[in-house]
Length: 278
Image (cartoon, rainbow, N blue to C red; front, side, top):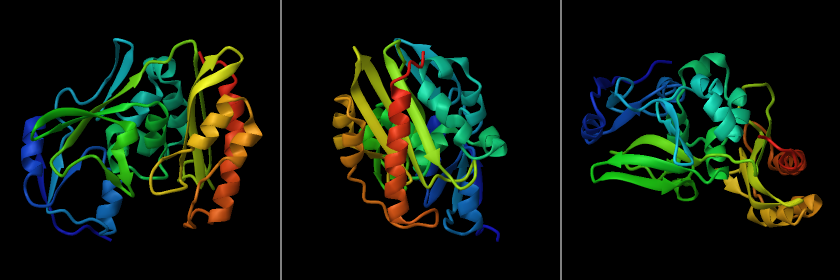
């Protein structure tokens, strides 16, 4: 199939992009790995595509003041190969090889994945597990939104129609940081039937600040808060029993399979959290 007709504009700056987005039915174009598919299948048919790829300052990875900041236009492949990501955001480093295939990672952007908010995608779950923040520029200026408040519903986020996601910010890992990641997919690179991204802090022989975030089992990334509390107490089976996910059947798997896989994933990731990652 071919997309419906649309106009194209290349933004010169963030302010220019915001202005262009104020026109009727405009969409941002970054990596385009999700957008091109929805255009070609006519699941979306904007009148204007606003290309932000040449805006200065929207890509790159930096570490400062105890945080790692990742520009929205940073390509997956650059994050996958980054020593700073491996050291300061090891959960993202674990997730990167699972995202699509090499061709997709060469072009896709971290900001695009977060903004698109596919409930089966890895990066939104990782950002929520790491209690990250999203920096947004809009007509009223800049603001930061916590990941806990960013994902609203199916493909629905805190981004408004004229907002531009500019970067994400994550607290840099320390020697106490523990992370875990696992997913089940029919083939490597496919969307996951179910997946789990997790972070915690070593606290003596146990864990604290446990965050367990499932993807592929609901309309958004989902924190399993009851299981977090049980796992912090060191009881993995209690954490599995406490899972209160309510997945629906989809093209990847039926609800019963997803619920079973959620427990398997929790057992696997719990073992990873018990290991040092730094």
